[in-house]
Length: 233
View 1: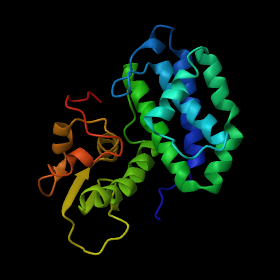
View 2: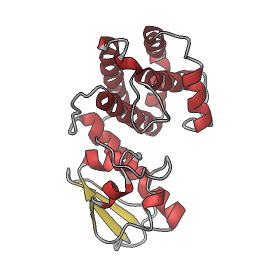
View 3: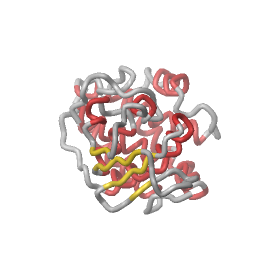
View 4: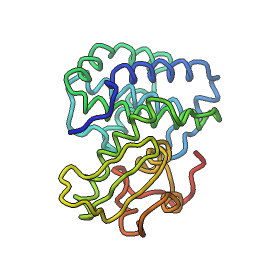
């Protein structure tokens, strides 16, 4: 399987450090702010989720990661902890996360892409600018460029080609034709936010498509249908 470059651990490590510094610098009211396009989470809940994901991985859990049940547990089990305690716990899992990403880079890219998206979410909730062209965003967009075309073949038997304006192109792993059913062209940031369900159906439709994407929009994101209302970021 093609994988994004560079290796995931340095990106994840730097994203984690940046996100910890960001939320620790926020005041007590800010970290209680709701984060759009999450399951009713506050900023503190987002940190509990990414910490809980690292904790599950450190404990050897692989099945069920990303399910609503598991994410609910990750957040709920840390409700009695302070934000500083959750951040400290997250940092305690450094060795486990670095080892995993060295042994399984593709899994590492998936985790790093997830963290990239949540960092964008937190910046959005805090009203801060998002760097739409950094390495983390690019790699995360490439990760979902790999994931989504295969997903759409499985779900809808549709061959989607993703063409990003950084010169990268992604197609299903088992490509048997040079003539895709649909082509979408976008910036890495716009593609990433769409692929992870952070754009509405109307916003997704507004990307540059070679044809009508109506038949795939309900299945475009691995995380469920795209929302009805437009998303500001």
